[in-house]
Amino acid sequence: MKNILFLTDFSENSWNALKYGLDFFAETSCNFYILHVNNHISDFQEEDALWPDSKTIEDLYTKPAKRQLKEILKQISKEVPHNKRHKFYTLTNYGFFIESVRKHVLEKKISLIIMGTQGATALKEFIVGSNTGDVITKVKCTTLVVPKNATYSVPKEIAFPTDFAISYDIQILQPILDILKSNNSCLRVLHIGHKEEQLNSDQKACKELIGDFFDGFDYSYHFLTNKKVEKGIQCFVESRNINIIAMVAKNLNYFQQILFHTKTEQISYHTDIPFLVLHE
Image (cartoon, rainbow, N blue to C red; front, side, top):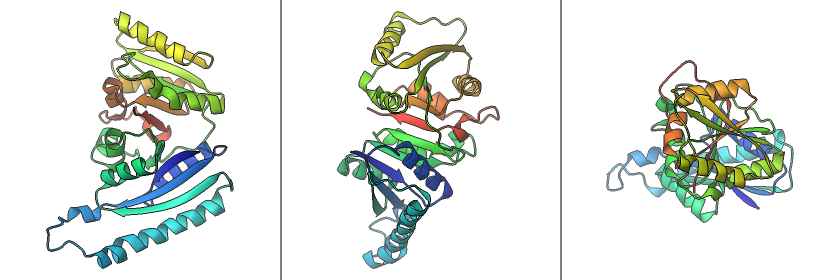
């Protein structure tokens, strides 16, 4: 049984991500942990005279969060088809957000984090310093980031941007393989580079390794020429019906260019297409 961690701030974006995740695992036995962390209290210092006592924390932070989490469970029962293979647990915490997420990932043996993001501004401006950016860069757990405009459809087309510079265990790609198995999906391995670039021997070996890993599944290689990786991806998703963009967090060259680019009106994929960020 999979253990999935939903992160919620009780916004419409987080509810959209939760619905997406429930649809994504509609046919899978799962324990869903819905976590809310109130990190306003982290503005205080424990030695500070203003540090709230336990009763104040309970009244101001814990009790209201528990009530809202109960409302989420009611909303799930009303709006999401009942699945007996889904079990739900609510969690509340206060203090430092990333520490809380790491703690629950370890204790609950979480295999996937699901969270929403607005994607309303350039992702660099929005994510850096945000909870979403902190999770995907600081928590060593595969994370599915669901933008506010994303609506669930069976993931038939998965884009996997890579520069064929693997410095990680190939098994990190297992979550992609799981999606291909469960949904009879197609994988589009995408390389974006300068016109004059050719794959070196190490990159060619990596390309063959990826091919061996996905042997027996529907996958294809695509090579685009563009000086900007994010613009190349935008062209690619516009030309195909891409449902999910998967990437390896440790592959910093592509990861940073895809998620932490400067503002440009031509880039919209981060508002519509979920990102599957893979961690070792």
